Length: 547
Image (cartoon, rainbow, N blue to C red):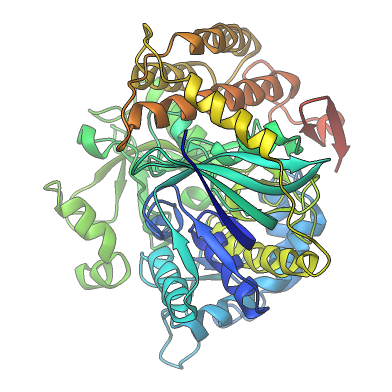
């Protein structure tokens, strides 16, 4: 394979909210940052798709709100599986990072007084979710993009990072395949920041972009990094169910925050059975399971969902607060101002991921991580509005601390490792019996059937046996030898990662013999004090960390 070498101070993998914020911080320190994106820069991540808002304690609507209340809500929402120090960092730094965004040009909705407006979101004691209509993530990302352009930070796109290059447990760079011509690029760096997002594409119904296959988890794990609570996967309660082409597309929590009601096929507002106090604004794990229960018990909609209705609200109010949703459904012939929409749970956010410290460092020297690729911040269930804040808080911290270690770090080289990676990739190009795309769809179907919203030991063990069998079948992938946009090769690399990560998810799910947050075991439906601990896993061992 042709190998090209690129050198930088800090390599940032991912161009979403976390990666972009990290790059700005590196540039502020006068160092060279390069952002590498698997898809098109700023458009292949999920930040721009986040609609509902950004949590920060400003007390501009509810004066009783406090830092302590936000910490409490986040820990309670996460079923106390969160790393408390990470939560404290998130909550304390979140308001400052929103002000940064405004300085970069982001516009948040304001009250008549001029103070920032805040809406209620699930699992929160007070109105603390700052927003820009129902397109908050896009507003945030556009501001970051403008700042990156202004600073002339280098962005490379359509490059899939395939491995981290190490030297004695120190990360010294990474390798990536250029989609345009299948060149292997060896990135030499003093520090690397992983901001690759989650892995919703492990499931057939997801709100995530198609690049989100869990690459970041896999390359970190293979390099020796620790992962934490990989069984904790959030299914957003409300994704579109029809038409088929839109299945899984997010219907923002803002719809429920602004007064949307969930109804079954009998017209009953069923959340009164499951969460009578919070109703539609219970935590996402509770609402998702409630919808799931209604559907499997035969009270679902025609297309296998339930109904979400905001037709009782004033038309002008809906246009102002939920403009994106109005257009999203108008495009498929539905007027949300006058008719109910069909929704069902969709794979959304990974609470598990790379284990980080409060300085965004990982268990590997010179490797940092920020955003959804990290575990520990959100515990067993993420509160809506905390993810955008997470990207900015830990993106900034990762950039800052990666810059610090550059001061006493020399560029190192490990050509032998790069050569081995080139050989591994080249070995995938061969005649086989299984198309990578079919293989990928089989993984997704298996995960949806056996490792989704409700789990049990029998089906988890069946999933594990099947995944281990499929791992052997990777040798039979059929990949053509083409240079330009070899999507079969990219998919082959993805499914290799996906199998690795799915096995870790299932093993963790089997281990956690209780229900906590998004991890619901029908054979162990209660939470127990014995399991108030995190599952930490790396290539060599499994550990438990008390909470």
